[in-house]
Amino acid sequence: MKYSTSVLLAVNGERHEIEVDNRTTLLDALREHLHLTGTKKGCDHGQCGACTVMVDGRRINSCLTLAVMHDGDEITTIEGLGKPGDLHPMQAAFVKHDGFQCGYCTPGQICSSIAVLEEIKANIPSHVTGDLTAQAQLTAVEVRERMSGNICRCGAYSNILDAISEVAGIKA
Image (cartoon, rainbow, N blue to C red):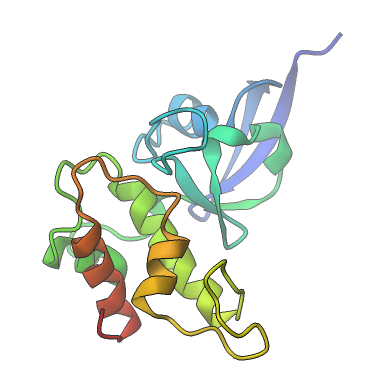
């Protein structure tokens, strides 16, 4: 019986072929096999959002999915967004608005924040969207709802909202 599989992961624009135990989560493959430790292991149950990455442009909790399920997928982690001196606009806004405090949840918060803006652009409704026939609006209520799966134990929520609002060009 085969217990491992060769998987091709396209992470941050680079292709990596790795051999993983079939039970390896995407989070563990990123951290342990590719040494991309920016994505954090928080609760390991999909409840805190610290492990949020983007797969094919959609955010997921990488602790809840197996690496073998993402063979060939385009994966973006915090390391793929910007570099010192050339930060992604969301990273720069988090720094400006002190949206990171201890920093542990920040990689997941930033990946989710970027995805929230993309969801609004794509007119994907949330549980608080008032009119499903109209273009979704980026409001503070919408952002809070869409970010509710990302926990910040330091309580930097208002600063995170300010950062997202700045990048989106709205007043929080």
